[in-house]
Image 1 (cartoon, rainbow, N blue to C red):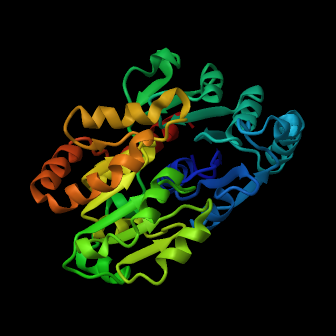
Image 2 (image 1 turned 90 degrees about the horizontal axis):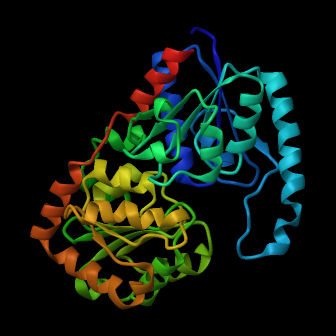
Length: 363
């Protein structure tokens, strides 16, 4: 398939972007002549992260439905129509042989346009509850890659391939030692380290608890690596800056080092966060995002909690319970080992290669 051209569409969050890059990297490793073009939404983080990974990207003027402000949705139909015209221009110029959709606003017009033109389309659905756009697109997709069993309630059974979720190679193949990682973040080598990751855009409920207890970590001999997320990060970063036992950043690119440094992790329960934590084999306290579609983050977390592989604190209980759970787990080495051993059983390190092989078989 020398010289084939593939468009990768989607983004919005790290949970869509990093698997997309992992799939492209895996295909490139098997077929170096493949040419890629990413398509994302203007103003979203893929416009920064994809070029950093060495790939070209085009941005569409598209946005998602705003539940918080109905008036903002007035322009949505016009933006969607405009995005289809933009996709037509991209297709004329790039002439793709295939399109891979990973979810996010920009995925729908690109895959829909490809299907109308008879171009092969592949979908990666990371969650246990499929998104509405992917369900619509799945009817005409060439193949659909999923993380979990039971997805035939959303997609045609004969198109589904269970691959797991692609994890960044830097994490899946990390050789970073804990000592190196702690030195990178400027932290002590002999203090329990807590990693807070509320997703690439942040998690307000988690961040507010950390802010409330920001001066309580040091007396307990705990240190913190805190990814605040891009949203409302300024106040958190300012408060954390003068405190020596806390490393804070709105986004951590070196997540392999963050995982290596951490003794325990507090995280949302998006599909990609779960996949990475299984591979990193970290004791984790999940705080599922309560407004995720079909409450899929709670389902993701419960699957591991029921197998004694994680702890869950519901979002409405964060203020009352989260800090106590952090301090308890950070001091309990036996519980940490049990959670680490149990979560490691669910690690999938080669999902990107499985997906790449299946796509290349078809082209």
